[in-house]
Length: 161
Image (cartoon, rainbow, N blue to C red; front, side):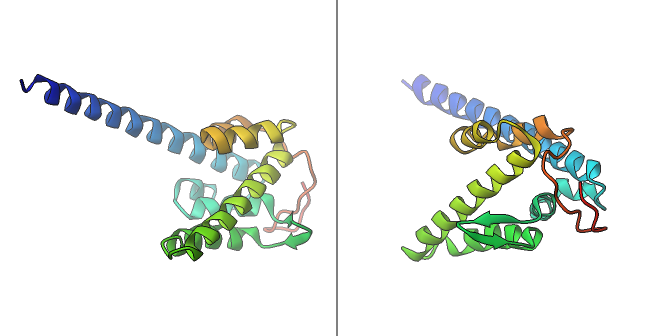
């Protein structure tokens, strides 16, 4: 009589545990990837790849700038964290929040493509799988030791890589 409820709760607990393990593994892969990319580029404080929001700062520094629908977006180390945090906070506003979240999502997809384009020849594939299957941390880990394929400026010392 009560066996079905207990089995259901046990299954939900097990699934919750699996999701927690996947989250921890993805967090470790993402942090290792960002820290390695920052170290390879000679950035100060690559440990910031392990700190939420600071990791977005490092990702922005790695990309530096990008074109967004014909407009050049510089200072991505400031814009990326601001967009992600601001979009999350403003996302709860009825209707307007959905539009803001959509804009942030498009921005992050284009940012992701630019990052993978800089470090891989599979930028389209990595971006699609990152968006559709949430595999962004895995691909960051995969490209962590790749040299930049494109010339970008290191904001710390104005050298090109």
